[in-house]
Amino acid sequence: MQAVTSLFTGSSGPQYLTGNKADIDAFIDKFDVFLFDCDGVLWSGDHLFPNVPETIQMLRDKGKQLVFVTNNSTKSRADYKKKFDSMGISANEEEVFGSSYSAAVYISRILKLEPPKNKVFVLGESGVEQELESEKVPYCGGTDPLLRREMMPEDYKHVADGSLLDDDVAIVLTGLDYHPSYLKYALGMAYLRRGAKFLATNIDSTLPSAGTLFPGAGAISAPLLRASAQEPLALGKPSQAMMDAIEGKFQFDRKQACMIGDRLNTDIQFGIEGGLGGTLCVLTGVSKKEEFLAKGAKVVPSAYVDALGDLLG
Ligand SMILES: O=C(O)[C@H](O)[C@H](O)COP(=O)(O)O
Ligand SMILES: [Mg+2]
Image (tube, rainbow, N blue to C red):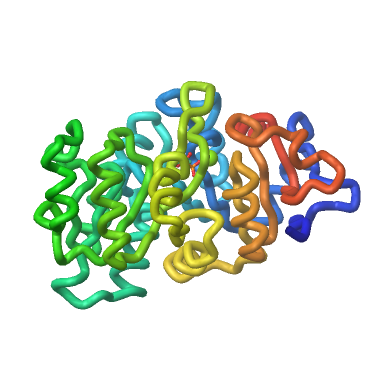
């Protein structure tokens, strides 16, 4: 893959901003809009990183437009509003654009499948279900307690003869699922073999939480990729379908926008491929500075900080 570097990456590589107030202020002044990743930038699971609410407020006080762009599909925009409130972060539900919403919008407004054959089989949590509901897209699977059980001998026959399948399913959508089961995978595979479209909210391999890494959405969908020999269309970062939808909803000049994230192959690549004015890598999550400082690094941000709170200078 051709190296993708940000417009503002000086010849000397990405700018290290931590501890340099003048450079921080100059960097912030370049942009009117900040797209914020969440996991690994604002928090790690339920652990809020230091000075995050103050940093968000500082940018608001400078009149910056903020959009929260997360690949974490387990929560809906309404759920994120609750999480922001619980952590004292001033943010509105309308400012959230998650991968579950991105997938729901793609299905309802781009695919626009005709009922009744427009149902989605979900391998994921309630965030996906809530966003499908918000777009009036029918679904099954997901958090259905009937699927959180052992595969029974008779299930094989009922999957094979179709009696356990819903004939209206036209899409299999995978996200981060904390309750995967062999039965869910068996149903997902049966729908794909019937010709259902294979979509994913995102395919991040890992999830940063509690200061370490856990299996991510991509690890959850991997068994289906292997079993079906099909690749899903991923609608989260770095998908440019998501960037186009965000630009359409929030109306901003990409050159005046900066993507802030902790992961090179989602957040930073998303900002760079989207032609944004800049990207800022925060080192409290997945990616390490050695990855983008290395000679010939493939994805290089414009600048980086040790932690988001460093922007307070
Ligand atoms: O596995 C996942 O889904 C990701 O690790 C998680 O969603 C990342 O969320 P983000 O950093 O985009 O907020
Ligand atoms: Mg992240």
